[in-house]
Image 1 (cartoon, helix red, strand yellow):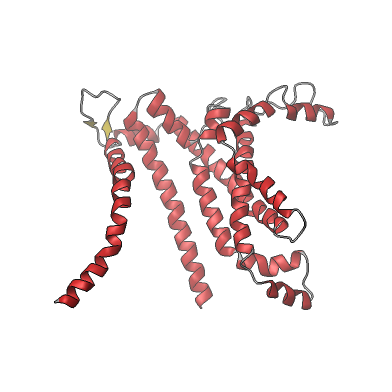
Image 2 (cartoon, one colour):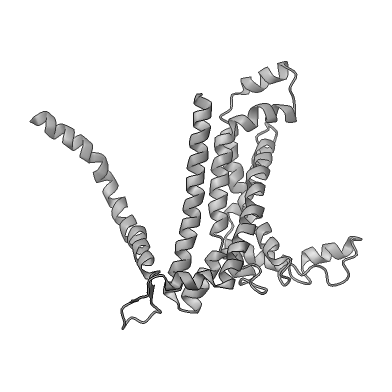
Length: 301
């Protein structure tokens, strides 16, 4: 009997340690998530004197015919396709550069990481000044013989350029963060492998292609998933720099959700948009698990 009690206590102890965190998550994540799921099937517009009215799939029918929603979904996919490949490949190159044993290399690491610690509000305002009609970027372009004229490029005021201008800020802000992830992976690779490759005649780019890239695949996959989820949830850059304009050309799903909830005060419709966003992120996570499991099976076989 005493043995059974001790075994029960040992099994219960981890859950007791998890209990405070589970309580906090239940109050701040799980319960609000359940409420948002329920509200997506109701009509509720910040009227505290009335209970939500059950409308079934009415919000989803409205979402299906909402032209702005499909435009924001397309913008989010453009953001995903444009940002993720750059944030998967370019930080790896930076990590390889700053992983060299050179004098003063720590200063370069700090310089590349500095944008990460800068507030997005500060970064967005600074880049908005750079993108201005008479900003520094257009002044530089006017000096170069590119035939752009006196007006320069309307970075944030043209539907053609707005979303790509915001994407550039996201990439600039995330380079240092993902570089550190790659740097941790690079420093775990034994130097003997590179020495053996050099003896076999592999050097320079060949060494990194034959050794670095295969051994860094788990980190590449991690960065791809993290950057993809972050790209689907982008909000601060859009809010600060373009407010979703011009003509909804830079409006993303999260910004449209914010607009419906806090500007139009249509909470139920915003919860419906949030449910679609949740399913999109869930799909990316499941894809990540499937790819990871498949690669583990291939490595085991």
